[in-house]
Length: 346
Image 1: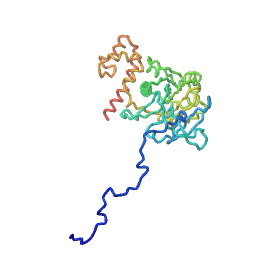
Image 2: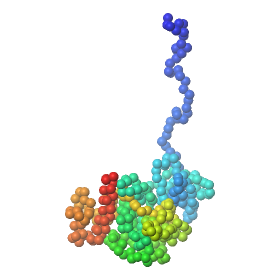
Image 3: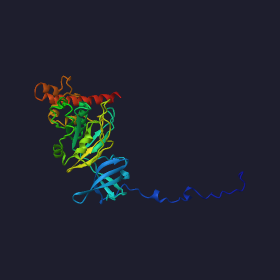
């Protein structure tokens, strides 16, 4: 007899298997990784991004387009959606006020223009997708042109497989030829533009049918040029600060505008363009003749003038390559080498 006396345990005949579990339909339902096919989705082009809302141009019929506002589907929350992206959308695509469609797929990109915050940062920031022309806008003066920044534009374009072209503005203020001499031999298309007489007909003909992304230092007249090409754009413009010589950021967002049968994408003005993500080989690939010669360089060659065994320098000295073309490439690669050095020193 235990110290409990004649006490009998009422649960003596029960064990864990006797416990009744409350059914939970959600927990017991088999999960599926299959997602709806969205066969009824329509394709749109992202023209602007603003705080989680995306403005799309969606084709209606053969020629018309509607402007649609959309949000991204939950499964796309970790993927960047940028201007120029081709996306599939479902829901209300009429574009009527108050409607909201949903982006369910991002179509494969043909090109991606990227930059990092600085040279020590290897995290890529996607700026624009599916562009095939990079329009570099540079001022001949006010503010002074920066060859190093243009080198960075060129490196980013070549890395992305985008064709770079250049417009030099304010040529009635200063002679652009000393600046353009830095890029002799690279075969870059260049247009010269005065303040009051930009070459609109020539640019329209060159950019029609292409997706063009316009980049430039603040205050060079990039948004002014976009407004001239697309009068309905109404991009904000400003003057250069007389004290600092710097332009003020006026375009605060990336926006696409219809230009003939193509698009022109205006980006915010930048004073730096990080290259922490770019590989040297990708830059050389933009110039097949130089890349072929550089294949014979010793391993680890940075293709700089002071490297005794660099095949580019040897070929330029022997006349097998145009010296000015090699010099321009060496300066571009020096920019990339400096970016690498900063990243490793951080």
